[in-house]
Image (cartoon, rainbow, N blue to C red):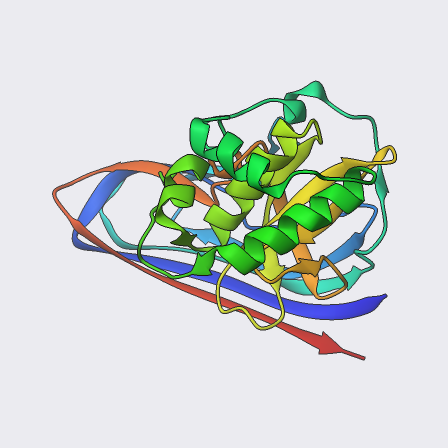
Length: 258
């Protein structure tokens, strides 16, 4: 088990200012079987109203609203996580994680890629690790060629993308292979932003795999949220009024402490 100190901060600047801003923010890690979280400070501003809720997947969420004009929107969380990630997180399987979702449909590109890997042998974990290795060796990490709306099939056609694309492709492959899988967003040592990876359902529990780095998720990762795909784990979703340009800065730091 490791003790990780984390700091996550996002600032959005608007020029000119906006108003009537409603938002939902997922930025606070929660306790799981693999991590125990101690929050030292957290805030979301500006906020005329702000409520803490839990979404349908058990993820923490701030839901808020700001009526007046503002040129900045900011949220931050600091804390310490005691992490023991290379363990099965035992829980009953919800069938929703067996089936294709918005970004992980079993389109021809997914089926073709899966068939290139055959024959696959072993249990669910062994087959998922084989798929992760294959994806790592045949897919190229290139920022800027995809966007938040890119599907697994579209990323396969490009042959390149970022962590979101690696996760979507692997989830699509796993579900096609009848291995339940879910999308995870969180933080890890060595990344200056949030990171995405995968959890597969194996032996009555969830086990993390990081196809971007070809790693089993270990004690250097802190989970924030999970869902069927990116759509369920958006860190910041909102709506505001005003003809504006938007600039976003994200700061993530994770370091090991004694």
